[in-house]
Image (tube, rainbow, N blue to C red):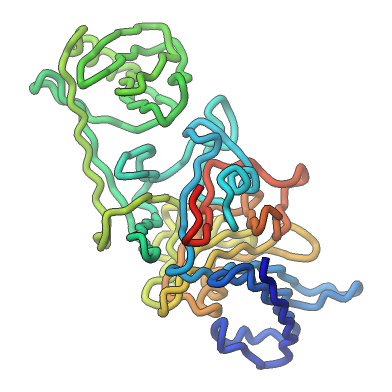
Amino acid sequence: MWIRLLTMLLVGALALASVGHSSGFANQVRTVEIVVPGVELLFIKRGDFADAATGDRWMIQALTVDPKLARLQLAQAMDEIAGAETTSSMAQRHGALAAINGGYFRTTGIVRGEPIGALTIGGNILSEPVNNRAALAVFDDGKQIHAAVTHLAMTAELRVDGKAIRAVNGFNRPREKDELVVFTPEFHRTTLTAADGVEFLVEKNRVTKIADGAGSSLIPANGFVLSADGASREWALKHLRQSSRVELRTEIRAEPALPFQSDFILGAGPQLLAAGKPVFAAEAARYSDSLYRQRHPRTAIGWTAAGKLMLLTVDGRQKFSVGMTMAELADLMSELGCVEAMNLDGGGSSTMVVNRKVVNHPSDAAGERPVSDALLVFSRGKRK
């Protein structure tokens, strides 16, 4: 492995043109490691780290990726929706050069790891958007990575025998009161549902089995399961019969429209920067106030005007690093030269892995947190 170390002490207003704008911090140390050609790892220690110091301190890790020399891939925990796995485990399992954690997810219960927000892979909807939040879209044309931040809305409906129509409420997640939810093979072996609804197994667009009051139906590999509760259950029992023909229609609307057909779309947010301007305040109502105003460990992704990708983590909730507010994170991404940037899941989830080693300091007392998905970096010539 080719590694070059370069350490720079920045004092006063001294800045590094190669990594962005001046930070304005009096005490700052930056260390750069060239991991492989096209992938560089920057460590930033910002603040006074003397034993007696009481001021704010930060430890930051930023991975710069040349989109022509590397690939970006989305990995799912345990290779399914209903699962949680550490970022380092996913990176090792797929043979990735580097990785960061991905989107928001359910942290407890039988479907721990289920994404909260948009998730599409290869055009297949695996999880529906939430509150029109920001989402990362990625496409690789075989020569370089293309990325964009957009905001998604979805409509989905079920048609039975070309006549009856019912709105679909969600994909691959726990069924709530009166909802109709679709479970695809990517979810798990079964639907993991309670026995208080009705489920219809669909193969080749035909109902092949009806399970009322049973729950946890097997999901056919060549189809899906319709799971209904309350009012949706009553509608389904009225309109669906053995061998009924069903059609699932979905529409994803992206704003702004995407300039490519995505390999994957990952919801998280908020968007931090657009065309070099901070835009996170526009989405504040879609997230909790504490996510914005309190300092937390952070994970983010962005890219520069030249197209270089930036994958970043900020340590937090620890004596040596206090974390950042959303405004501070947006400022940091701009300082590092990004013109587009988006926040990913943070807190105890924030993890960066390089060469099978966790290079940040996850904040959970138990250590690295199992998460829903991860963004993996590979050298362009290498495939799993």
